[in-house]
Length: 203
Image (cartoon, rainbow, N blue to C red; front, side, top):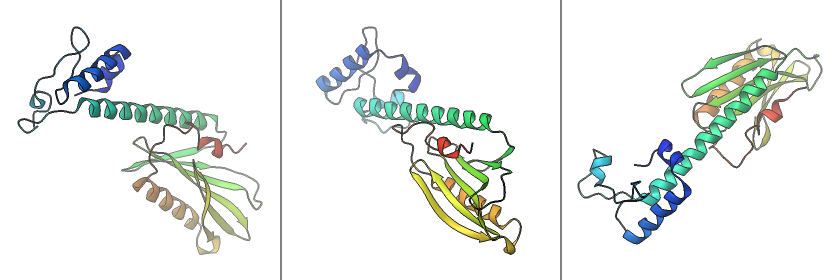
């Protein structure tokens, strides 16, 4: 089975040789060898639980390995963008670890005018999926507006009247962040790594 470390070490010539061999030998399996290509042993050697006679699909393995490599790189770039954004903050924040990911709670102290951002709840999945943020905006007259921010844009999630309780808006924001982590948007290596954090720059 092709692994990411092995794939990373393989030269383009070796990959070309392997793919050519795949096309030439049909259902036979191709692996790295002294000359860059060679026939693999039965699938059971690589996958102990494989059924007898099962043949691996080398082209599919190459495609899967490349897809995984792209997602891993996208996740690393996303995390780096998140760290850079957190490091640039001039306000306090806390982090809560959940089963599906992390939620960063950023607390601002803006002037209490309508439209001011009071808090951001940033949900970051453990996997390579895209992050999401729930922002609390002062809407005036004691009302807090919840806005959802994603790499695709913004959406209004609802409003909370502060007369219903001091922590109602925070509870609603956290519930939205947790709901997102249960079904996050799929990773998209084609998007910039900071596609969300650029929307969270409040300065």
